[in-house]
Image (cartoon, rainbow, N blue to C red; front, side, top):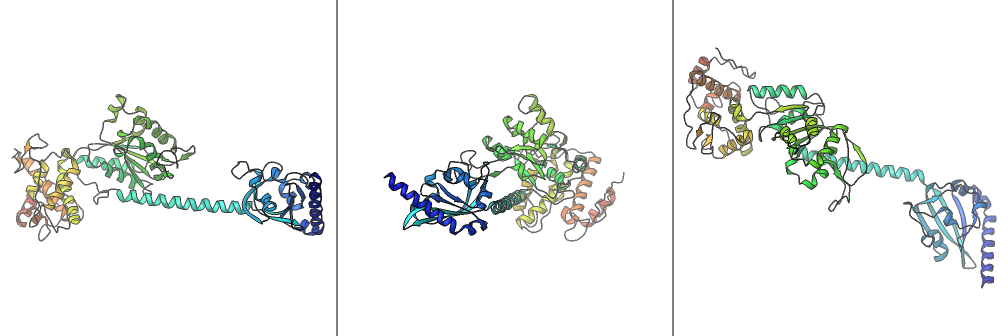
Length: 506
């Protein structure tokens, strides 16, 4: 048996020697690496190109197991068993094996990407080994990887833009004098001055106030007037996020990070990169996550859930809350250091009941919006409507006023709205208003004049200064044009069309 094997090995060596001698010029001139292996997997010859690529001299490989020297490991680093080797398979099954994108290893332990073909060699019909021709395709592989990475980046940016657009479509935009902020009261003017001051900076802003006072509207005004105005404003309603999903919602997660994480997810901070993140109801963020939020605010760094890679973001944060966060911090329910980090520039919004002068202006604006939305045709508020609205305490603030006006537009008949206020509603002066009619309030003459002036100003503002004719202030107030003109003169109101200038003669 040993004699037959030795004879077979001798015949194989003779055959490979003949191949090498007959093709010596081709082997030396070829740019591809070429080597031969016998049926034992031992190297029989190696051409100069293979020597250069592998870093081995021919005499160092001839007679040795080729697989264990240059093909022992998969691309991912796992062991490549010789029984799985396509090179060896050629002299076992007699088929040509062509393989793309595998790794060969050099003498120094480094690796490179190769394509190769293993062709079986027969001697008198007997498989005696194989000849392997391989080429270094590292540059092509690198180019393919760059192309794949570029495609992934394009897809990532496309998905991000889709998400940004989805978020942008959710934002509230109201036409008005200043980013939709309606009003002439001292409180509104103070808010507008604060917006103008802080918007050009990157300072963190904390907006406080009762629910429905327009915190999101102020956040939008600050963002729009900032250098980030052409980037997205991403809103996060912290009160609507389940406690176990906060971290994923803020920072994103990697595929497989937890049950149900079927793909990579971009968090809100990443979506807002270069823009502004509006954290509505920030007081609802769990204490366990507040430290990570503080880190992002201070360092601009975070990690996705289930991922070790640290990511950098450039995000301006505007936070809002209807809670007293300072009191919450004293009680240990909110991190004090996070409170101070958020409260760099505080903006406090006063409730609607404390700026009753703005109610007629807001009501006219909201009625105009409601008629567009409901396609009801032209509707108007009377002086009596404005008086009733101004006497109500509005616990739900502007949001409640919007609902009342929209309901009034739905109930309107013959162009006249029906104001439906809750029975027993409290007025700013502590009195009650009945569903059927407002209970009379004792006013001084100066109070009455000021009330009438504000109401007329609101009507003139809504009508663009037009007093007479269809769509004019007289029609809106349901008074004769001559009567309105007389009141304007008596009250000393000056209204220049398009300029919204008004004065009261003392």
